[in-house]
Length: 148
Ligand code: HEM
Image (cartoon, rainbow, N blue to C red; front, top):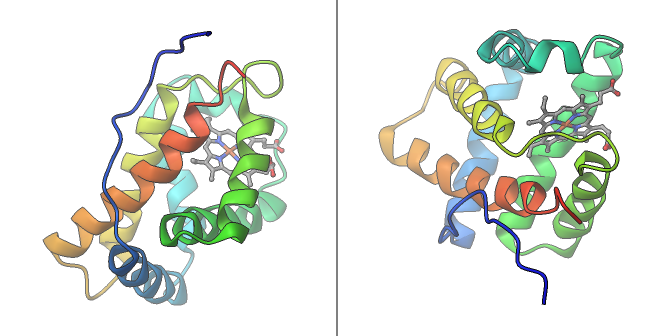
């Protein structure tokens, strides 16, 4: 059997964690340009990121990103819709297609956590640790598809 390097540790994430994160995401996206701020942070987070988006239409990309985050939260809740959406993203981001190197997902996550911290007026340290668990689960799922 082919062995693959696991880029991210497995994380425990409950339905309650996912529900709290969904509420937080709702509050955060109500306020201002959440996704615009995320891309401002993410594109400057590591020199390898910006060139990958050189031809990107950010009007479309902003909606796609919002959907992507929703799918990660649904996947963490155990929803089939969430998991099947992530299977598609896992496929487009793998080595033989967009070729997103697994280490960049760490920057993606840190940028998202920073944006949530700025935009959710009710953020707490407990809620942030729930965000970490929910994102880790989805990111691991997608990044593990790199070599597939
Ligand atoms: C787990 C986190 C991520 C999610 C949920 C996500 C989601 C998406 C989605 C939904 C798209 C639209 C195309 C498609 O449906 O496949 C997309 C495109 C893209 N993503 Fe990601 N992505 C993630 C992480 C990353 C990372 C870490 C990078 C590294 C830079 C990246 C780079 C890109 C690029 C370059 C595109 C194409 C943009 C274009 O059309 O020009 N993504 N992503």
